[in-house]
Length: 334
Image (cartoon, rainbow, N blue to C red; front, side, top):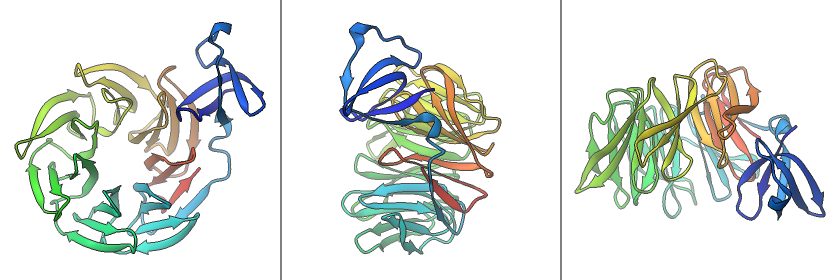
């Protein structure tokens, strides 16, 4: 049996096979896949819970009016998007925000008390969350679904199934830059490692972009052998991707090279991935499962089965995980 422990000193997780407590502290005896000699014993402040019961403990289920594929935590609020945006406070539905006319695919926090949402209705809405009111509605921000939003270098970045990436000013929320045909197929996600805007697409490419002289300039690209649906950063220079090949791929961004491919055990496409810790990634798939993958041992250490395709996985505060699906109008928080 393994235990998942979180270090209070640095908020990092590790998998432990044997351990014993000394008061409120934990003395690690043996790490997963590593033998720890007596000289390596280290006494740290830990809180822990069984990895085998991570998904068996009581969960909180919230109902939505459409499939759920976006979630964000802002201060004391949990926001997730169905057809509308649901605001949860103290584990109860605090408000329901009507504004979009189709499913909300992305929600992100912006500076101050502002957040933004992007939808399949092709619009971006800028909200103020003190009163949860609309500041600005950007109609037809794209000509297809707004798939992902990103805050990068004090700019709002959006990507779409129309294959474009756009940059919006935070002062007036007007479009400053656009890159049409950034990919040759749907763009599924944009993230940032502070230096680059990183995008992934069904055209099998992951691309790194810089904002230079009011232009979006591609600086590098990586090619997978299948459609890429989701990406996350392990470090500034190590990226993880998941997609139609049902595997996790680790990429070296500094050298623009593939490090390794990890078999996940998924039987259908991976739709979304998220980083749980330095060595653990959460994956959600069309095979109706959520898995926790140990990158070090290259193995699945936990599978949680559902009865719907998983379109969203996210690490939340206080060791919680949220996920939702395409054929189920709920989001589950563990």
